[in-house]
Each structure stands twice: as structure tokens, then as C-alpha cells.
Image (tube, rainbow, N blue to C red; front, side, top):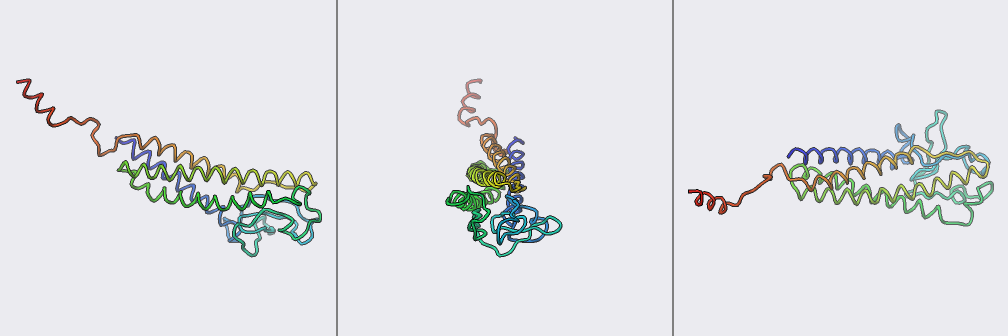
Length: 231
């Protein structure tokens, strides 16, 4: 049946695309080169905050300023850089009150980074094992399992990201500071949809007969007995 390799191929394309998009988001802030220097989670007007750039952009690795052409201008890299303006800028002056005295945003973004790495690991495993899914049932089971685990952690990452940065944007706006979500948040929603689609296709595909398996098999003994009785 041609459906099995077709579903496996489509799911592999979805997973591969999700992995590429993940690297765009993951490398933003770590590399100041095009195109990853266009991605960030949140941008806010921080011109009134001492020690902060006029416009601050948060990534996985740091808080960045902006260049004249609107790209990220990032400095030193810190893994799992937390979204916590008082500690990011070393001051509480003119920082929205909702950020002061709480570790909520700190933990949301720290766990978000960890879950994103776990998601990426299982997504790569799903893609690597996906080649076996083109012709074997065990390959489709393993690829489907990895894809579902990746989809689970993708959903967790997107949920934590939305909770942290949407609330953060609202906090800045309520403090009369302009703020907006970055394109990395939109990419997270795309990743979630792609992984869910890939997992769904692999779950459907593993229930189909393999191209190497006959749709109907007749026991040899039964066939011989039938021939004898017909005589």
C-alpha cells in the first residue's frame, strides 16, 4: 500500500521543517548574523530604565538592543537567560511593578529553555528513525513515539512562552511603555502545529499495512485442504 510511505514522508518533512525553525529561534541572540538576528520573544521600550537600551529584545540567551536597520544587537551569551527585567538591568527604577518581588517570569522562561532542548532532541530522534518508517512497522512505531514526545514538549514550551511574554508585554504596556511580541512566539505556534501534525500522521500511518506485507495471507495447509476437498 502506497499510503504508508507517503504518510511517513510527509511527517518527516513536517519534522524536518520544525527542526529548522527551532534552530532559528534557538540561535537568536547567540549569533548576530542574518537571518537569526531577526528573531526575539518580546520587544519593549526601556529608554526610561537606567542601564537598559532604548529598545530591549529578549531571546533565549540575552537581552539585546537594536541596530539602525531593526536587527538584534546582542552582547554576551548566557544559556537559559531568564526574562526578569529587575535582574536583567540591575535596577527596579521605572521597571513595571508586576516584575518586582516575583520569580514567576524567571522560572517560566528557565523551564521553557529546558523543555525546548528536550523537544529538539526527540524531534531529531523522530527524523532519524523516520527513514525506517518508510518500509517497516517498527520504524513507524518508534518515529511516531518520538514525534508524540516532541509534540508534548513543544506544547509545553509554547505554553510557558505565551504565559511569560504575553503577560510581560501587558506589564510594560500598563506602565506606559510600548511593547510587542516578537516573531519567535509566532514560530513557536507553527512548531507546535507541525509537530502535532507529524505525530498525527505517524499515528495514522503505523496502523496501515506495510508495502511489503500482503493484504491477505492464506495459510498453506488450509489451501491444500481446500484443493483436496474440491477434487
